[in-house]
Amino acid sequence: MTGFTIALEPFVHLTDEQFFQICQANREVKFERSPQGELIIMPLTGGATGKYNANLNAQLWNWNEQARLGEVFDSSTCFRLPNGADRSPDAAWVQFERWNSLTLEQQEKFPPICPDFVVELRSPSDSLQSLQAKMQEYRENGAQLGWLINCQDCQVEIYRSGQPVEILQSPATISGESILPGFYSPCSGFGSNPWTLRKVGG
Image 1 (cartoon, rainbow, N blue to C red):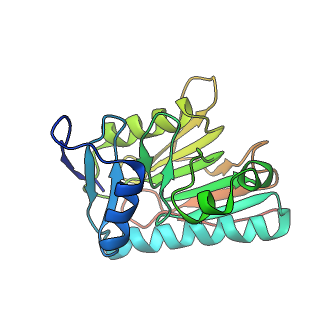
Image 2 (image 1 turned 90 degrees about the horizontal axis):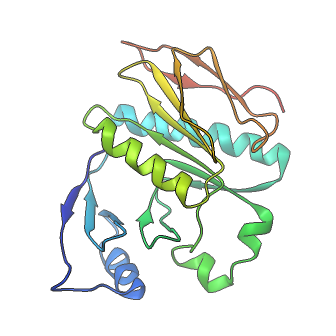
């Protein structure tokens, strides 16, 4: 959902540790942080969006249990990107080699890494432009593949490293491609009905 942004600079500069402690002290609130140091308060999701997020993460987790190629993270995980932003995608996946290169302390706090695969699910109150900007940011910071799932317009935007954005209109299937080999998600219910993701293949 579209967040409420508070400009702190140049009056207050939050260190990475201070931002982490603010998040720990306010666990009922979801925060992000822009590259410019702005604090972004993310509203809670509604039931339908929460259900879609849970379904999406379950499919990714089930695939990963078979593939055993990396680690899966839900929307409560905050990643510290190379550009200084702190972001929490709706679903994320990181290759084992990259995840294991982090120290235990880095893994336990906000991992200083951009996921290899990210998903953002547009809720009814989300600005499409803000989500597109976030997807571009993921790609510029190292994401190899990203899906922006836009149920309202029956579209999926595919973000690939070094390639133009591809927009799929009411796709029958979306693929994890070479990043998530064997992961295919058939799509159904675009439009007035919930759009669901189901995992096939192995």
